[in-house]
Image (cartoon, rainbow, N blue to C red; front, top):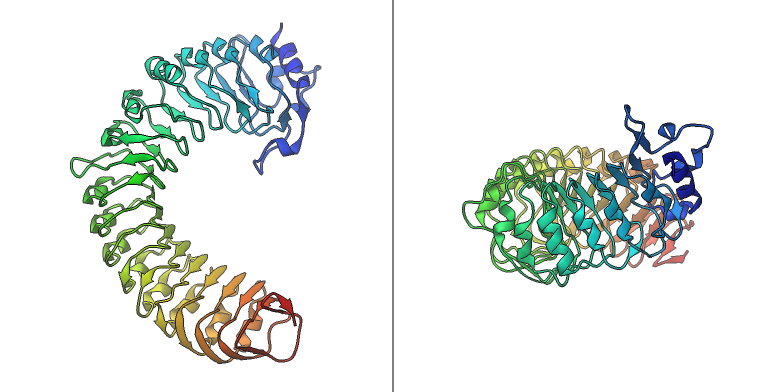
Length: 462
């Protein structure tokens, strides 16, 4: 069957529904396909310039919905090198073994397309594969996995997130291609002990083992150095012990997620060596002691989440050095004392959550400098005094929570300047005064409203 006819028959075997694709940029690529134009000019189709063979097909996020049969005419395109069917809805079809017929494939992406059953054995025969993405609900059994390891020696990118790998021995990962730059096995039900050798793959840049709660992970205490690694996510794995200071050797690291891990001991000060980091998540960990002041060396950091940790003592003033920060969450921590005024240096902040029972004193006026803030939460602190008028400087605020503090006195009229503010929480303070009429205001106990306007009192209209 000619390639263009094969593609037209392929298209007719599916209906187009927007709900079949989750991406916000999705659109029905095949709706523009017309028989009066050569398929090399169709959206998502790439042809070899010399032979006119169809060598690339990118139909990701294309609204395709329907059952994917083993006799699908797509398999009449033997010269395909790149095939991307990600983010469509194939109605829990069994993944066809015929995908193994594409002997020239270098890139195969079937992620999030609602296939079911086992990964077909024949995929392990695609020895030219450089990139394989099967993110979804497929089952990987040991015989297929053994062949994947043995045959796909050219792999540089392997993404198997949310597949079922419960029968796979974790240490078999060490036999994967040394060419790998990306290995993503998030939420794969991996079980057992994983030796830290996986962290020494020579070319690895991205390693994601998150959400494998029964996977025992250890980290090397010495000789851990990787100049290429940029992304490391070990969150929600079964890790016991301390975070070794050798973490500071990963100088190229940009993304580090160690959240929801049962660490013991303190966060090593060597964390300050990771000067390329732009994302650091340590939430829901058991780190004890003070947050090391070298945290202020992470000048590239844009996202910092320390929520629900056991850090104690005062927040180091070096936090004010993180001038690229856009997101800072310190909620439910054991930090104590007053906030350092240096927090006002974080001019790029859009999200700030300080809701924690141990902060006290007055709010530093320097927070009024954070003109980019859209979300600000001071709930459940012990801040006292009057609500400062400088809050009115934060004109981009959409959400403001001042509940459960020790604020008293009149509400500042500057709150009326916050034209973008849609929600204001004031409950459990001793406040008096009129409220802006355009807001949803949660006032609760201890707040008097004058005059009566449309707002909410513990969820009830007053």
